[in-house]
Image (cartoon, rainbow, N blue to C red; front, side, top):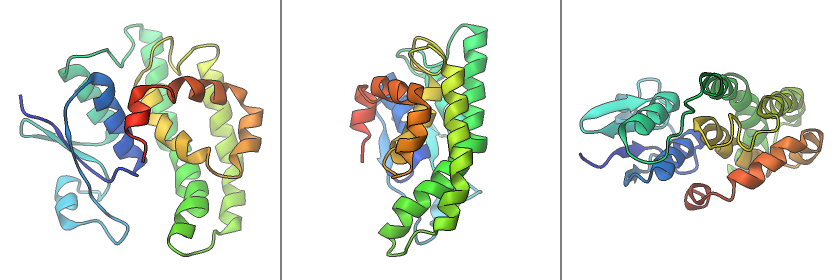
Length: 208
């Protein structure tokens, strides 16, 4: 079995989520950095026709979309399972992944983090109107996810799952924004969750 290859920049949340899955499974893999701030390279568009990251390849099998990559890696490679056996916990994992994709990423990374982190890196000032507009939805996402987690150690139960690995890179960027403090004060369960998740070796190995 050949070594899988992941194409995407280490700073990308979706690339990091895929790396977290590979690290948790103990898979030896190659990361091919893809820089797209100046435009997505043509070779990446060939791998991912929607011009996104990451893309993945294993034994001649190309794949994109984190949800598909994560499930594939979990099911093909040895190592601790990252999808619960319990149908309700598995459904909860899938629900949270969907919430992250549909609601959490757009407002948290696409708006708040982009304005607070990326724009200054590019030499631009943050658009405060965009920041302000993002906050109600960011707060709602954190509140909903904290409620779904409940008293569980991880998002979908007692063990780490694909849901945790999907949210972790987004949360890591989010917590570095000035606005995160007030939101997390209203959702203390998220800080408790992060204290557990951030102690994992996979998080430390993929930190940029």
